[in-house]
Image 1 (cartoon, rainbow, N blue to C red):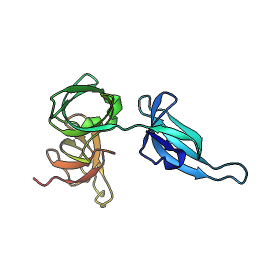
Image 2 (cartoon, rainbow, N blue to C red; image 1 turned 30 degrees about the vertical axis):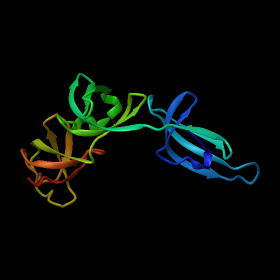
Image 3 (cartoon, one colour; image 1 turned 135 degrees about the horizontal axis):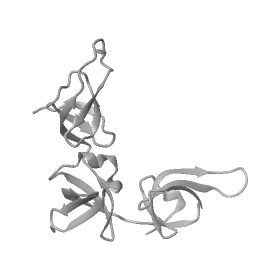
Image 4 (tube, one colour; image 1 turned 90 degrees about the vertical axis):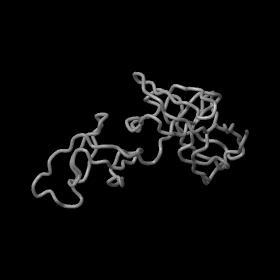
Length: 188
């Protein structure tokens, strides 16, 4: 679907120079001389590199519609994650680096949003938060009882997270999957 440069919005996926790009920022610039243009910061969905392009306001670009499907995480085999479509039971495989650091929080049966283009996965979005168990927690350092102080803790998968001093090994906590930060103690 063709759209004009003025209609480009952050989050839109464009096909430009034979590649798929996600729009990060868009700024309309009206210089003193010459015509107005849209300056667009984009990231290549497959390679991950960023670029800044300028489009004249009357120029058109190809907007791509992605299919968003809820899929269930099954398992990791090396650095490849396998997801299953809950309706068709079709399985797709996604490289760990495409998921990024949130891949540490994947667990069996977790439902994730997978963005597909022509049957190929482009991105995986985990739930906003996940409940995990602390395997190891460093002891509290005396005098470090201020509410803003945190200590290192280790999850079952080996991932290290910063936790409040009152959290001990074996405690279930809620973690933000986007940045790996402690949210709260799990209510179970």
